[in-house]
Length: 188
Ligand code: SF4
Ligand code: SF4
Image 1 (cartoon, helix red, strand yellow):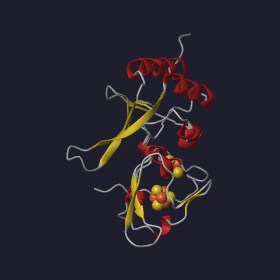
Image 2 (image 1 turned 180 degrees about the vertical axis):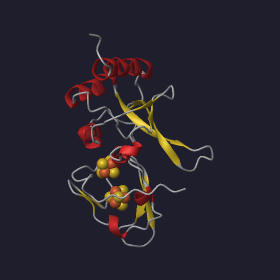
Image 3 (image 1 turned 90 degrees about the vertical axis):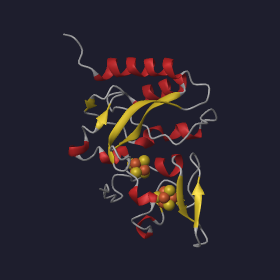
């Protein structure tokens, strides 16, 4: 099964996070062959603030067309529960669009890239950015694959280090605390 997602541009408008953050094989500017775009570097086909200049011309088999952005997926109501916490619990997860955290990509201490932030909308962006800077980490996703390792069946959310020196245990605890204070029902 191949996941088909329709990117009509409306959802992504103004966001260019994946075209910066992720590693991808993209067509060479010369039109001959392909080049490896490293994680954490803007794609040469990216028009700042607008998006991909060639998206409609890319083959349906290209990684850019097949990429399943977790945030875009979560705009489909039938996908909203396909997010799981580290212990496997499925959760309803309304998230900020990734570009809310785009400024982190320009921070000099961010050395581990290729992240796709998935921070609950209940946590104010400024607060999430402050916590990301303090812990040098962010809540992010990775695709959970089917038993054959082929098709994405959902997304796992966890704390992802943004720098080599990140204390991931302390960072996870800090994010858990933030999740508890903003996302869990408070006792009466
Ligand atoms: S990260 Fe998601 S929302 Fe942002 S440009 Fe990429 S596909 Fe669109
Ligand atoms: S080719 Fe287009 S969609 Fe693919 S990474 Fe580059 S700008 Fe993004």
